[in-house]
Amino acid sequence: MDNIFFLAFRRMRQPLLLLLLTHALATLGLTLIPGRNEVGEVWYMDFFHAFYFVSFMSTTIGFGEIPHAFTAGQRLWVTFSLYASVVVWFYAIGNLLSLVQDKSFRQALIERKFTRRVRRLQQPFYVICGYGETGGALVRSLTDRHQHVVTIDTDQERIDALELENLQLYVPAFCGDARRPRHLIEAGLKHPLCKGVVALTNVNKANLKVAIASKLLHPNIKVICRADSHDIEANLRSFGTNFIINPFDTFALHLATALQAPGLYVLQEWLTGGARQPLKEPVYPPKAGHWIVCGYGRFGRAVYHRLKDEGIDPVVVEPRPVLTGLPDGVLIEGRGTEAITLEEAGIRKAVGLVAGTDDDANNLSIIMTARELSSDLFVVARQSNLDNERIFDAVGADIIMHPSSIIADKIRVLLGTPLLHEFMGLAMYEDEAWAGSLVKRIACLLGSQPPRVWEL
Image 1 (cartoon, one colour):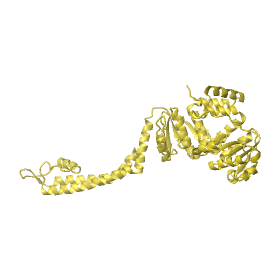
Image 2 (tube, one colour):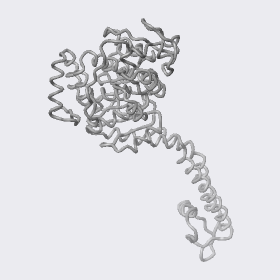
Image 3 (cartoon, rainbow, N blue to C red):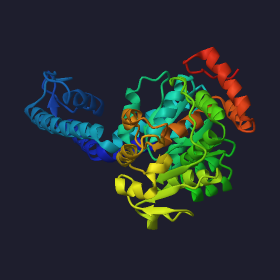
Image 4 (spheres, rainbow, N blue to C red):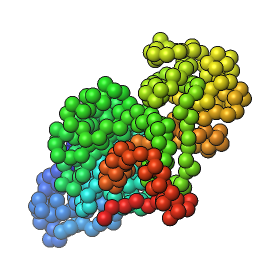
């Protein structure tokens, strides 16, 4: 509100002063110039009649001369005042139109409207910071369950895209920086019905700052944060962030679960995969044999260590080991997209391949090149861009890891069905026979339809 008034008065100060000065001089002149009444007596217009006449003089054509017919001097003064006031009015209107089109002023109006809408929310809601692929998937999932959300993102194009989404509920959205406490408060951080803040930007330090501000300004609120750095994770844990989700570590744990207990893995996929996804067939990653991990970045490193924990000693293919670090085992320096590199890594005797670089095109090329050399491979693919979903489906990977989907699914469970999260945590302590029995029961009841999970 203060910004709106400040911008308006700053831009309109000079036009308003000129309008005031023009009207004041016109009014004063009419009171000083003598006139004559019907009997020829000299009279002077009082301030009330002068102000009244000047008030409609600037906006009316064809007005009458009141309270008596004007003399030549009065008419000359009125003519001068009329043209002067019209020019000043045009100047003021031009400045007003310029103000309305000013980007800062329009942003202030949008911010005020957003704040007012958030203030009027009467249902519990969550603040989603970041409307990228992860934030978009989460917003759709929550609104499908009739859970209210408020979204803030630094990219106006994403906010515009949100407004075009066909969502079940209206989602207040604002283009702002969630790292600024003022914008967090405007998004409803201190609102009595705000149930939690979810930091999903693609910048670790931004998520860290959102989490710190949320815990300081609203200590009892639930904070869920995305982090793909172990240092940031440790920092977030130090001040009590409720849930920290690392998509790479989470997927590596899922892969380890699939190796140890395929039934438990498919149960987890069925219950947490979302109501729009059909039931997937169970996958059985080979527990023994030669594995190749292409890419030793954050994802490749997490998968590599999980495979090592399962007794598998994979070979790593990495073109820039100086930047990523060296694994404990065998390293082949080169690109997995080249057949000669895969041959050196032992692709012909391999049972499993992880295409885990941060480039979708390279991962697809790795898979296609590897299958030219060895068709009987269990393939794990990393997909960074959701737009490439159809291509990855066509390549026929056994497991596809998409960071945004992993984060969105886990947060959706945490916010929508927290008891399911606890159930899956307890299920980890059950054996494969228990998981297989439950999977069969669910499959008999649902067929190929995905389960709909809710809480009473």
